Image (cartoon, rainbow, N blue to C red; front, side):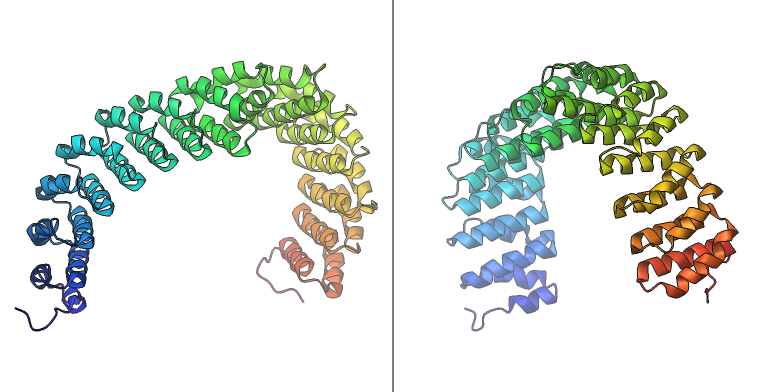
Length: 464
């Protein structure tokens, strides 16, 4: 009989495995629990036999902690004893045994784990499902498919993630079935899993899910990401989806095709952009925005005429913005004159988009029209004009930009200084020095200094 209780913390600090194994027999429940925990963390397999004996301890928490420790040790000698614990009266001991068997990964446990899919406690069922997923092949698909019908959404979610971890085509069918789950979190997990499997056959069920639940932004985003992940094999099915009756399907298909940048979608997207008559205004605008954005990302010159036509239509502001942005990305000179004309659009947001687009194209025809906007009453227009002139980089903008160094708005002054640095004309040196001397705002001051460094060729030189 021991006169003193073992100091488990000191034994652990010394990595005294033998002392900790002896502590598993101590009369104190607390000591046995702490000893089992310490042995699991140390990871020395000399402790396996002692921990197996603790699986029949009279105290629930000792059995629980011993099962966890055996899982950490990962020794197959513990499998049969842990299988017995799956029928323990204490649910946490059963759950820890399931966890441990998953960590060990011995197939002798599969049948017993499958039986635990009917356990009355959600936590036990979840860990049994997770353990089955650790075996990593199609032999457990049937069992995991059964778990997709569990009453607990948490268990169903674990089952979906376990199926995804198999990374095999055998998981496709049950994951497609999980798309119909009533819980959004389960649906999203199934969508993400299907995207990672790389099987183009899932496009149709994903589109069906989009039709059924597309008003949920989280579902729509998850499907968009999954389709993108599938990549090239889904281009043709998505092109077909551009003519679907459902607006959300068409907009998502356009977004994905734009991100994929495949020119095969060009003609279908142009039709989607142009053939919208007879549709409700909101639907028409959404379709045109999606098509214009996709065409800009693909960057094919065939889209220019259709985008210009949309740009000059007196319809939705957001559609015209999308068309201007797309034309800037494509960079075709044919868009320059229509974009210059759009600098006088009634909507300031459209004028701003047109300026940025002209800046991207870089055609000098736009210099004087944009420079004229540096005296606009709108601060945002002046900011955009200075940026666009810097992008174009033509010396014809130097004098108007020098004037803009005295603007009342610090962002306009900063953008004008940055643009002068981009253009690189030495006529700007003295005006920039004067601007530096009078500038009190920190950000424009730094921008002016950087512009001077560019112009002087001494990037690291200290001005003044």
